[in-house]
Length: 288
Image (cartoon, rainbow, N blue to C red; front, side):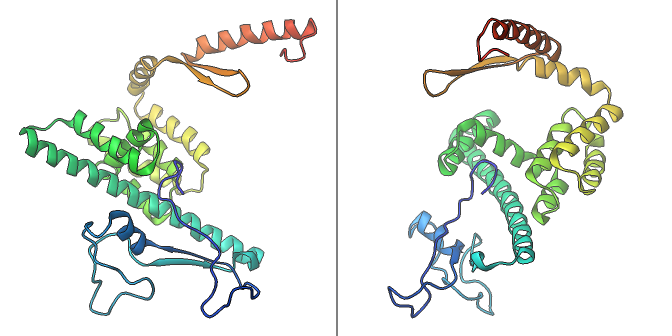
């Protein structure tokens, strides 16, 4: 559902009440029952009493602990008109963003719980170990690589502490996760006293309807103009992350990629392009 496949929803065609097998199927009905899935995932010991499968919460309030509750239904998707499909798609996009915001809150809560547990066990805080353990747990639950879970948990920590305005925008659906990542990235090395104001300025620009890629370019220019001293610091940090990666592909092939300073990367690319054109001129169909 999100950019890393987290918060998965179940879908499928359901037979309506009273519809016998073999009868013509009616409009498709795709249902996500949040409360039931939460309870099923944690068994009877998860602290969540059975929740109603359908219908609103009782007038006196919910009879279950805080968590995902209720149902979402999409009926008759195959019969939507163009205008209706546009509205539904927009609402689904807002739902995805809302869910990403809730995921960030829960990831941050997990890190806090691991911190408290570690503090109780060893009598001291160890932020690096806490983060690593919590990310490993999240990776297992979300079925994503550990590095992906670490990225999500790092984002969550910032969203729930220094960037609550950005979290609110994601929750309200006015920001995509691409916008969020740009805000967090461009906020690095900004003086702490200026951070809230800079975040506010970035969010005002993001609200103008820029795509994530357009916003990334604009946000970088804003940061470099307002805080030129961060350019050299960020370049030094980026330079320290230089690396070469080899990724196996199919049919006996592999991808070789490298993260280098831009000038050096351009030089290598130019040399390889010149060599490839020479091979092409010599008859190699893959040259160039």
